Image 1 (cartoon, rainbow, N blue to C red):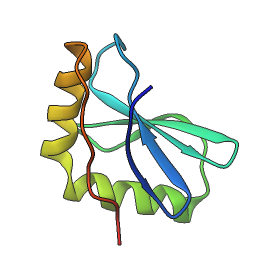
Image 2 (spheres, one colour):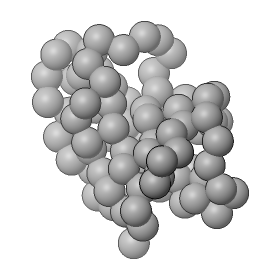
Image 3 (tube, helix red, strand yellow):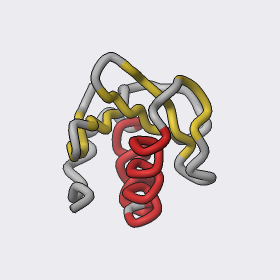
Length: 86
């Protein structure tokens, strides 16, 4: 479970050999959610609205990097790091 970014107590992770469509996992405290990389929609889980907003804002800024990270983990490679939201 490579972590690609961390900001405001939110961890953004990918799982090796994960299923399509391209997505990332967000973990905040004990809560988990899944976000589609293309649409930036939360497809699973539940997060506070403010946290969800931070994640969507960050993902919109880094959508191409998220796509590259998805491709890397699907190929069994390290996805690298993506700059946090500041």
